[in-house]
Amino acid sequence: MAIKFHNPKSVTLAGKYSHGAEIPQGARVVFVSGQVGMDSRGKLQPTFEKQALQAWKNIGQVLKAAGMGYKDIVKITSFITDGRYLQANRAARDQIITEP
Amino acid sequence: MAIKFHNPKSVTLAGKYSHGAEIPQGARVVFVSGQVGMDSRGKLQPTFEKQALQAWKNIGQVLKAAGMGYKDIVKITSFITDGRYLQANRAARDQIITEP
Amino acid sequence: MAIKFHNPKSVTLAGKYSHGAEIPQGARVVFVSGQVGMDSRGKLQPTFEKQALQAWKNIGQVLKAAGMGYKDIVKITSFITDGRYLQANRAARDQIITEP
Image (tube, rainbow over all chains, first blue to last red; front, side, top):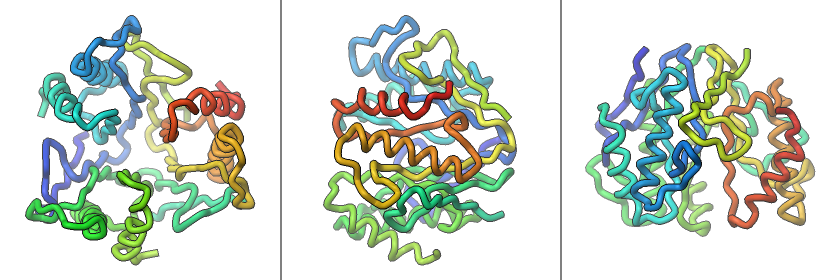
């Protein structure tokens, strides 16, 4: 079952996302907990870049355990402690999520 | 299918909302991305008041594209950069959303 | 219908939670509004500890009104104004939610 996207022309798109993402009726829905830059042995990665890459990888691992993948994401909330890291987080995301 | 609201008397209501909002089983569920004060041509509105009005309008446009309306909202998360804008955001919301 | 949890070994668990929580297909879904430390008479509790206890109790009251309980929670978002209160909030949660 495919996610249905809604992007009305009356609302500007300012990046790689959709304005509306509709879950197919009766679909399985998984909530993924907040992920941080900690690897499988509990070691926090040394830089923001590596922490961001690790967090996005972790999301993928949890989705995989549920039989899902990045393509099944309908909503992401990112809490970033400093606006200066915003671009680095997007770069990390784009490095990990290569699906459209 | 109507949303079912839950407002136990044991919890104080401090505004225009419900404590619990239940999605009908099998309903379509749409996630709307974060909206900002940018109009359809990508122009950021000049004041907080106008930005807030624009963001609430944008939410309505996305809902409309999905065949929904403000009455179908079960959850809103607002991130406001300064607590002093809280009332202005509520005023903008009430100006745009006139449905009960 | 039981919630299905997903905890792949490749992602470290750093507390009492699960990395993935899957809603059973066709389940009822209730969104609970943000709860604060205000009791049933609208009185804000005097300390952070009491406010946190009250907020967690309120969540339980709303869930109860919907015929649900803490065991039905699949996602919690906590906004805490000062990181120093993090442990106190967890302690309050663990005092109120004694179910596994």
